[in-house]
Length: 276
Length: 316
Ligand SMILES: Cc1ncc(C[n+]2csc(CCOP(=O)(O)OP(=O)(O)O)c2C)c(N)n1
Image (cartoon, rainbow over all chains, first blue to last red; front, side):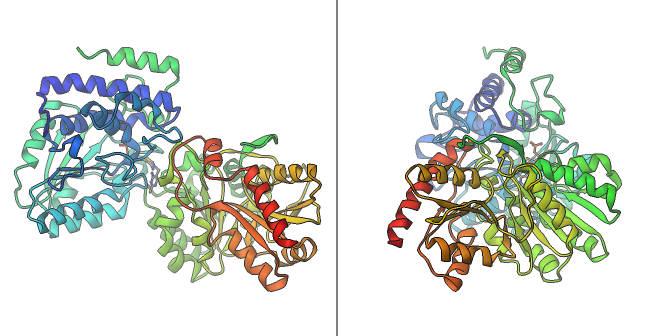
C-alpha cells in the first residue's frame, strides 16, 4: 500500500521534508542536517513511491524493509514517515527530547517501521542481509533497502556484509550509498578515501548503478532498475551534495552535526521555499 | 549538571591540552583517532603535530590494531573515539593486540556515560568499565573534573603499559581545588565523616557531595571518596572506610553490574564486610538533555540520600 506519488509530486514532497528537517533539528538544538538533506530525494522516493509498506500494518511480514544504517541521518526518515502517516507531523519537533519516541538515532521498537537500532555506524547492511535471507527462506518477495554513508563504509563490517550478500546472491537487497564526499572530521578523500566506489562494489559481486542522488528522475530510474532482481544484490552509488538545498550548508564539513539557530533556520527555510 | 557546584571545562578538554604538552616533551607520542578528532579533542594535537597524528577513518577495530603495532615498535600510542565505539567495536583487538601483549596503548574514550545527552543510547557507554575491567592488566580510570583529568592523564602517559580512561562530553562540576594533588591508584577522600561512606567518580561526585551536605543537615556525617582509579583499586582506603563507617553507598554513571560498585563491593567483602547500596543504571537510556536523563534514570541527589538512609537502617 504505497501512495505512489508521481515524480513531480515527490519533488514537492522533498520541499516539505527539507523544511521538516531544518525545523526539527532547530527545535532539538542538536542533530545532523548535512547528511539528512543530502539523502532527501533518496528517502522521499522510497517512502512515497517504491517502498511497499502500510503505516497501519508496519509489521506485515511481506512489507518492504528500509534500514537506515547511517542512523544520524534519521531526521529525513522521521520527516518522511510523519508525512506518510506513521505518526503525527506535530511530533517531529519532539526530536531528541526526553520521553519522545523520536530518538536522536533510530531505535527499533520506538516507532512502527523502524527496523533496526543504528547509530553505531557500520551495522545496518548486515541486518539488511538477515532480512533479505529470511525473505528468501520464507518464500516472500519483499525488497530490503539499506542506506549507508560514504564515510560509514570505512567500517570493515560493511565489507563483510557486502561479501556475504553477493555470495548468497541476495537479489532482493538494495544498498544505497549516499556519496556526499564528506564524513565527520572532513572530506572522505582526506580522512579515508573510499573511492572508486563503483569499482569496489562491482568487484565485490554487486550490480552497481551510479546516479545523481539529488535528481529525482535518476533516483526513480535507479529504484526501478534495482527492483528487477538480476540475480545479485544491487548497489546504488548516489552522488549527492551534503546539506543540499541550503546554500550555506552545502558541501560544508561544518554542518555535519550542528543545529541551526533561529536566524539560520529562517534563512534556510526561505531558501527551501514552500511546497506548492 | 543538577548540582549547584560551579562547573569547569569538560574532561575531554583536558585531554587535548595534555596531548599537546606531551607532543612537545616526547617524540615517542603518537595520536590516532577514528573520525571524531574534533569531538574527542585529539584534533588539538593534530593541529600541533600533524606528522604524528593519524585519522584512520570510521574504523575502530583497525584503530586499535594499528596503535598496537605502533606501540610494539616503541611508540606511546594514544587512541580516542567515543568510549562506546572504542570499547565495543574494538574489544577483541583490545584483548588480543593490546591487553594480552601489554602494549603501551592509552585508550581514551570520550562522551562516556549517559550525560552525552541528545544523541541517545547508541552513542552512550554504560558498559565501558565492565569491558575495560575485562581486560586484565589494563589501568582503568575516570577523572571527575578538569584539574584531576589533567593530572591523571599526565600520570597515565608517564607510566608504561595499557590504560583506559573515560572522559565526559559535558562541562564537569569542579571537585578539586587549585594545587590539590591527585594520584593514579590513590582514592581521594573529599569529605570526612564516620556515619557512612559514599563512593563515586566522574560526573557523580558533584551529586555525591550534594547528598553529603543534605545528610549533614539531618545530622548524618557522610565520608565521600573519589575512586577515580578502578584498577589498580585503592583497597586500603576503601577497607578503612568500611571499617570506620560501617556502611557504603556506591554511585556510578554505568550499569550497576560489573563496574565501580562491583569492584568496591569485592574489596569491602574481603577486608571489612559492611552493608552496601548501589546507585547506577539498569539499562539503556534515551535521548534527552543530560539533566533530564540523570533525573529520569535515577542518578540524583535524592536517590543517593535515599540509598544512604536505607544502608544506615541496615547498619543498625
Ligand atoms: C561506530 C561509529 N563511529 C563513529 C561515529 C561518529 N560519527 C557519526 S556520523 C560520522 C560520519 C559519518 O559520515 P557519512 O557516513 O559519510 O555520513 P553523512 O556524510 O552522510 O552524514 C561519524 C564518524 C559513529 N556514529 N559510529
